Length: 305
Image (cartoon, rainbow, N blue to C red; front, side, top):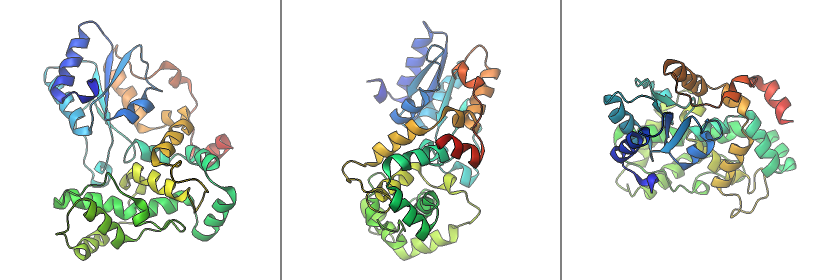
């Protein structure tokens, strides 16, 4: 029932809990975020609560910050903020290093390699890389224009929806190459925006492309995982489509992601800075402070091997 609370109700719940609890409160966007962050949060010192979206998380913070309520922070997805250079000005609002949590997981060399070994086919992967190069780079490239379309939709007020995409409608299941006109059509059809000019949208998208953009900041993680899942059916794996759903792939990545990688993120450091500025509140479990940080390709490959 708490998952359905409005921002006002969630803020009131936190106020009520404070009457008998002196620890920190950490607000996250959704259930999958909670599953992931619980692994690193000291649940004896910090309660984790779900807001159902970044807008709601920010609204809860605004309500509590106005009352100078202490010991609360929120972690939300950066979405397009890094690409568009939209700085976050709220001290107790922390954003992910990359586009979102799933993009952070996808960008982990360790988690990607472990997931590929577990779910992929070695011979098919070798053949694919010989023809198309790096598998993660190919997947990011397939999702690139979709990332730009999200930004364009927001800036132009197209109100496009991306929640029920069938990646097989515009991504080739052998080469994992995206067909941009087919992608535009699929998104517009799903959004019931038959009034939009597809050629005009494509022209605008092409003008947005910048080779300097980091695709882990541009692409949505769920899209990357979805195309990876599509590839695991034929291009780089031999899995039954009914078994290799995107949600299962995301779960495997969460399991494969290592604590040492998380300690190396800016997000982890930002929360530590918040802890130092807001004693005695604590969020992360103390054992994380003693972990060696995993850095570099060599270290990642050694750990995964």
